[in-house]
Length: 172
Image (cartoon, rainbow, N blue to C red):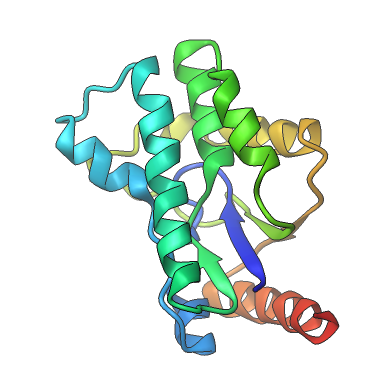
């Protein structure tokens, strides 16, 4: 199974690209668990929520993998939990690093901030996009994760992502 993770700060087109790629490969995308959890908590999160959010995301990935999806297209992953815990709460629970280190090898596609920001009731940093994107780059580098930057409109993003995924699938 090839695990493909769409990463990057808020409003970088991850969900749109995940849906497009999943349709292309005939699989279902693994959604972002934080959206569901955020609604359950009425938008009030603390550091104590970092682990349940990460575990919920990992559960969704496991369920999709058990259904045999290949590639596994993840709208986000535990790296987002790590970045946002550090940003909002000043620290990341060590368990998240442990969980990250147990993940299978993956292709990380870092969606760029070159598309228009759109409010959705959960997003809160239109003026901080570059700052947050840099936090994602920093985290991926600290985790020693190689990643590919995905830029442009949805057509360009899809073409580049598909090229990278197809190359990885042909090697497996």
